[in-house]
Image (cartoon, rainbow, N blue to C red; front, side, top):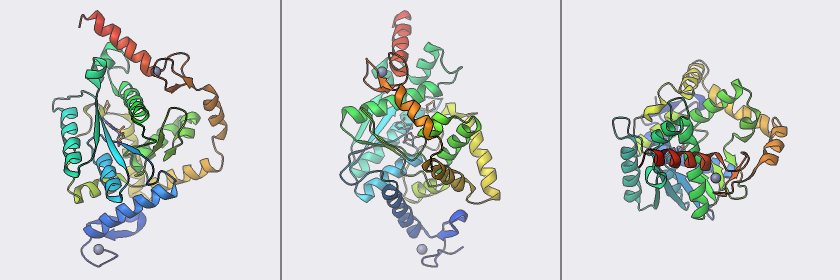
Length: 315
Ligand code: AMP
Ligand code: FES
Ligand code: ZN
Ligand code: ZN
C-alpha cells in the first residue's frame, strides 16, 4: 500500500475514505481534518478559552496535542478519580498526563476527587449503594459536574472532550435501541452553552478509534493503554463490537450511521423533546449548576450521602 500523496510506504489505510497515507502525510491530514471539523461545526475560534478534559488516554491527549499544534488557547483538566484496579489506573494516567503537559509547557489543572469529597469514586459508589457494584454511573456524574465546575470557576467558555466516532456511534446505538428521545436530542458534536455551563465540543467525533490511536502512536505520545478496570463487560464495549462487525462488512457504515443521525436531527427529528428539557431545567441551590431534579442536583445529593456515610464510619 502506497501513500496517495507521495507514493511512499503507507502506514495507514482508511477504507471508508479510500485513503492510504504515509506517516508524515497522515499526521498532517489528521491535524488539518480536526481544524476543518472545528470550523465546520462552529466549535470555537482562537479567541475562545478552551478547557480540554484529559484522561491520560490516547484520544484526549491526541486532542490536546492537535489543539496545541494549531495554536488554540487550550488548557487541560485531569480529574483524579482514585481508581486503582490493581495497577494504579488513576495514578498512572495522571503521571502520563502531567508528563505530556510538562513536555509542551502546557497548563494542567488537577482535581483530586478523594481529597475534595472524602472518598474515591469506587468508595462513593459503595457508600451510597449506587450502580449495583459498578462505580460507572457515579463516575459519570462526578466527572460531568467537575468539568462544568472548573470551566465555570476558571472562566473557560468551551469544554472539549476526546470522544471519537466509535464512542459516539456506540452511545447513539444504545440511545436508539431504547428510543431515548431526550438523550438523542442532546447528543451531538456541539452542545451550546447555557446559563452557568460552558459550550461542550467533541472535535475528534469524526475519527475512528484506530485513527486517533494511530495519531497518538505516530506522534510518540505516551498514554495509558489499559482501559478503566470497571469498563469490563460494559454495554458500550459490546455495542462497539457489534458496530465493528458491521463496519468490517460495510466500510464507512459507522460514520454513515452517525452523520445520518446528525442530518435527521438538523431536519427536525426530536425537536419536540428539546422544548420539554428546556422547560424542566432549574438551578441547584447548592452548587448553582442547572439540573432537572427538583431541589438539589444529583451531584450535591450524592456528596451529602457520601459525607453522611463517611461520618458514620467515624472517619
Ligand atoms: P470516557 O467517558 O472515559 O470514554 O472519556 C470520554 C472523555 O472524557 C475523554 O476523552 C476525556 O476527554 C474525558 N475524560 C474521561 N476521564 C477523564 C478524567 N479522569 N479527567 C479528565 N477528563 C476525562
Ligand atoms: Fe469512571 Fe471507569 S468508572 S472511568
Ligand atoms: Zn506521503
Ligand atoms: Zn448541585
